[in-house]
Length: 100
Image (cartoon, rainbow, N blue to C red; front, side):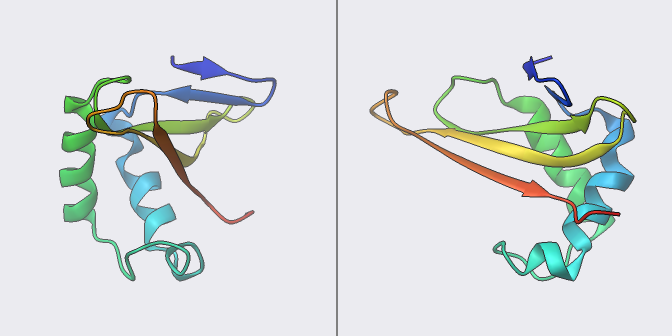
C-alpha cells in the first residue's frame, strides 16, 4: 500500500486489475480528458507490465492503482512524475472512472 484515506486505498497495480483498468481507460467519456481515444486489452497488459518496473520516488512516471476501500473496486489510477535532474519538482495526473 502506498497510502490510504477514509474511503480510498492507493496501492501498486496487480494483474487482477487488468479488466477494470482497461474498462476505465476505454470509456470514451474518460478518454476525452486524456491523450488517448481508445484503449485495448493489449495496451493494458503492456502498461501494467511497465507499471510493475517503476518505483515511487525514482525520476520519471510512477503509476499506482486507486481502489475504493468499501468495495475493493479499482476506480482509477494516479501518476506521479518526479522530474529528471531536479527531484524537488513533480507532476501528478489521474484517471478516474465515471460514477456507475
